[in-house]
Image 1 (cartoon, helix red, strand yellow):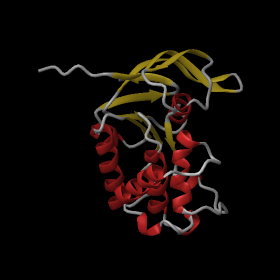
Image 2: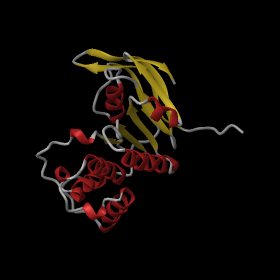
Image 3: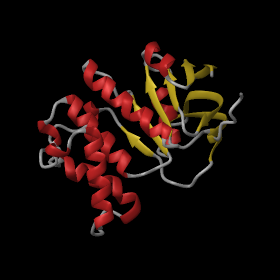
Image 4: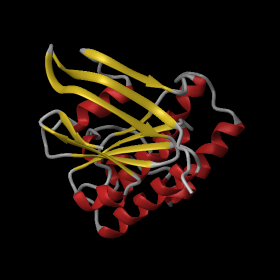
Length: 215
């Protein structure tokens, strides 16, 4: 039996890049809701640029990106992108996920704190809540960043190579959470250069030199 899938994001003729120089060229694709989509490609293929466009931090040079919902996408950067001197705790990091609902200066509600605690529990980091990100291992930092994104409760979760540099146990734990998140109806999209990870996903976008060569 064929199951009709719902489109979370529709990309049509997208070209994008930096300072007027195109990195992506004429990309047309659909990203399904409730599934895990991988963006596969070598370094320089345009994976991060596509994530940036989907996140709304890079403007297209041409073409369109249409989302089915109006919620702000949740973006998870690589744990290595966290500045070594950033004086912020795990709990403060996860609290940032609620800013999309409250703003950065409004007091968190009991419901906000319950969402944060649930996300930290899911990632197994609640006991690290008072620890600074810079004191954690790479896997712990990545789980904290993912908990922040989950606390945002967006319908579109974007991740830039979330398992790079992590041990097998940490990789499997993050993959399990991403699958659970997609099963709850969220469109999960993450960049990877590992073909094995791409094959395990529900849907794949394969980039080469800024062009979509397979979907």
